[in-house]
Image (cartoon, rainbow, N blue to C red; front, top):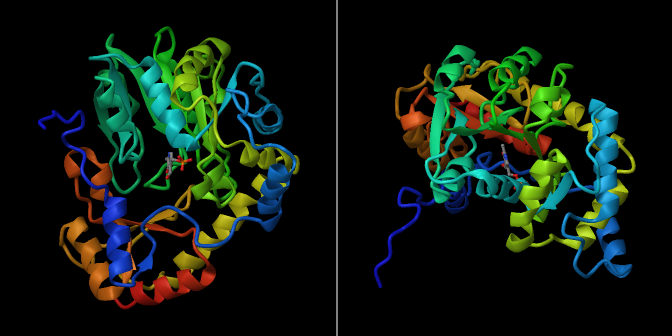
Amino acid sequence: MHHNSKLPHVGTTIFTVMSTLAQQYKALNLSQGFPNFKSDQKLIDLVTNAMNSDYNQYAPMAGNLELRVAITNKFERLYNSTYHPDSEITITAGATQAIFTIISTFIKPDDEVLIFRPAYDCYEPAIELNGGKTISVQLEAPHYKVDWTVVSRKINSRTKMVIINTPQNPSGTIFSEEDMLQLQDLLEGTDIILLSDEVYEHIIFDDKKHQSACLFPDLKSRSFVVASFGKTFHNTGWKLGYCCAPKALMAEFQKVHQFNVFCVNHPMQKALADYLQDPIHYLKLSDFYQRKRDLFLSLIKDSRFQFTPAQGAYFQILDYSNITMEKDVDFAKRLTIDHKIASIPLSVFNTDNLDNKVLRFCFAKTDDTLKQAADILNTI
Ligand SMILES: Cc1ncc(COP(=O)(O)O)c(C=O)c1O
């Protein structure tokens, strides 16, 4: 049977390629972004409790109400910003489903969506499936700072949505307050929707403050803020996340959500609602990961890799231009096969696969794994 692919350019992702290679060659896997340590036993027990307490049937379409209330409380505590639990929050199957649904809800053929590269890889296929056009702003290594005059030149009457991601995967950089104010100015008076991917909001270093879109009133009025419990509570396999938006935007989102999944895993939602009662569980996360970042970087400080410490998220990018001028994809494969350490080449996230000789390493790993990784990197 003949069929025309709706995504002719999408093949196996680099994450699958590198993880498969890592397995095949028994390499340390610092490629994919997931922790290799356990989620809190307390949280796991709360899921069992929920299952034993009748939370085994469909949740409400928007999600378990106690969880939505816990999220409302979190936004008020951290950002002094209110999202109403009845109409402005939806629990999703990870941030990925929130992102896919937001894009599907609003993007029509020929609408333009602006993204910043290097970019996480789930935005573009969702835009393309809906007939939209991805407009990329390539950020330049090594600092990946946004030039807002370039952004303003790319915004026009066809621009329907802007997607930002702070702290950013894969660069580990963050948007400053000034960045957010510039963005707010650019979007003011337009009907452009902002999708603010904030899945690493609780992983931010050196006493910097996370600049959520909800902190900026005009941005908030046009934004979906997207979050992921998997990133926050070390259980990416549970695939639970959520998004928040003003009522009118959320009403449109839920029209699509209810016929896509209707609702997501109920006992885990109940468990997360209970677990979120103690804010320490997310407040301590930045310190936890900053210690890991600092350990990893102190161990490789005399290696031939060059770096600027990550400002947020759990990825550290390393520049290897002192070592070789091989293509980053080739070098990443060679490191996996010959040196038994897997990473992700940054070019896969860039416009036209721009290759700055940079690899991404995930440091959401046990100290022991980080030490083994450093031992290898110091020999290269
Ligand atoms: C920037 C970014 N957004 C979204 C996601 C997806 O999150 P989830 O696993 O909750 O679907 C990830 C996961 O790696 C990510 O790095």
